[in-house]
Amino acid sequence: MKMLFSFSLGKKEDVLTYETLQNLQKFLEDGKNAREFATDDTTKSIIGDVQLLTNKPVLYVCNVDENSIKNGNQWIAKIEEMAKNEGAEVVVLAAQIEADINELETFEEREIFLEELGLTEPGVNRLIRKAYDLLKLQTYFTAGVKEVRAWTIGQGWTAPQAAGVIHTDFEKGFIRAEVIKYEDYIHYGSEVKVKEAGKLSVEGKEYVVKDGDIMHFRFNV
Image (cartoon, rainbow, N blue to C red; front, side, top):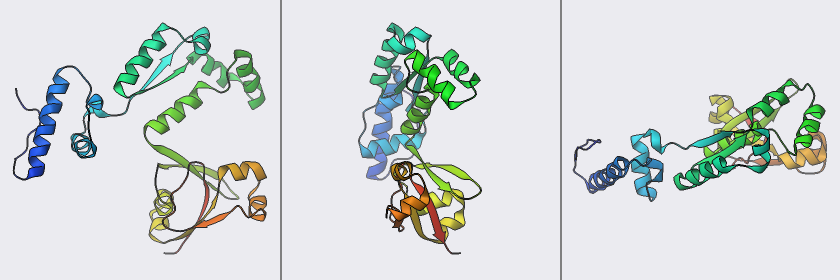
């Protein structure tokens, strides 16, 4: 068997890497995806370094008709079973319905349209959430007089790392972050009322950002 991966053997770690990749090659030659290969923390890191396409996270998007979006069908069931075996994800949507939703001008019109179809939200919303979860991403917000912006970061990022997405100076000179939880903002309706209720928190460098946090950074460079 010809080895697809080449490197020199020396340390104990090199032997483990060789054995792992050799087993992986046999697995791939059976027509299976690398993401299905059983790993522990060590071998997962080894395989990750190889950057195989079939080790990338996968999301299957099923485009179906109006009836199937509500009741499902045999093909969706087959895709879901395949995805389960691969450790992949599935989202079901109807492209025609999504196109019709985009033609509607107001939020109220879209809500009525979805209600008539027996749906709670557009399929594209589910698609975005599934993609973010699969890629281990999340969103935080900054709000000012001129604009409100959403910023994409990795799950588990600290406040300085999140600030660095806006500008590297924010991370280098990070002092603190003023944080409002999304749920608190929705409940109280404004930043002023959140502060009055004592729900604004001041966080330091170790703070791990939560999905939906509304943040204001203090920094000095």
